[in-house]
Length: 279
Ligand SMILES: C[S@@+](CC[C@H](N)C(=O)[O-])C[C@H]1O[C@@H](n2cnc3c(N)ncnc32)[C@H](O)[C@@H]1O
Image 1 (cartoon, rainbow, N blue to C red):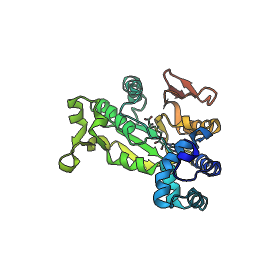
Image 2: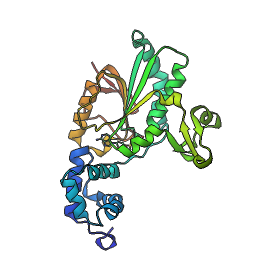
Image 3: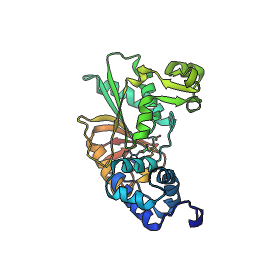
């Protein structure tokens, strides 16, 4: 987008201030090629709340105004996701990981899974569906998913469990009926995840760059399609801290375009973007 096509003045200096703030706060890199994206995601907010002035917007960021910072972070994160995205991960979980944990964790009958960077919730709900399917044959287990994200807007949507019917179009009628309630009257066209699936999940706001407040360890961590936006140093630090939150043999699932090669030697590949924490 050339300068003339923009409604508001958005200089390289504005962009530099915004991108350095975002990277420091979230780890998300915003190289020069993202300037148009940043403008298009922020301009409607700048029109509505800052009188069309990126100077005013940047000043509010510099002054640490919490509403402006939240708006900025929510606008910049990329939240693309889907139910059973990268389906092979969920197949692997059901066929290999859960049967193994059934034996390994027999003494505690407890399993903890973390969906780190859960976006609008499709990933943790897909996990809950797998857990429901698997554990209905194994009663008495305490199985929980922690779902976290930095973006307050997506987290609110995730916790509501409400989706448009198009988002669940991949499921058969029987599956939809089993897992979702259909909205009526003004909620026509919407579905809501049933409460027995929601009960597996706790949603929490968490910036992956900040210390992890959770006690205990996780048997499985899904952190998929999150680190692609981070620089290498941030990735190295994050996977080191994930390793500290797992016992040896714990499983880590990352996104299809991500790798731990040259990033971490605390995990060994199990193939297909699935890793295990080494001893
Ligand atoms: C593309 S979505 C991935 C969603 C899901 N994991 C998947 O693969 O379908 C990336 C998510 O990471 C979140 N994210 C980005 N930086 C983060 C950070 N520093 N801390 C926590 N979440 C972050 C974004 O808000 C976004 O919802």
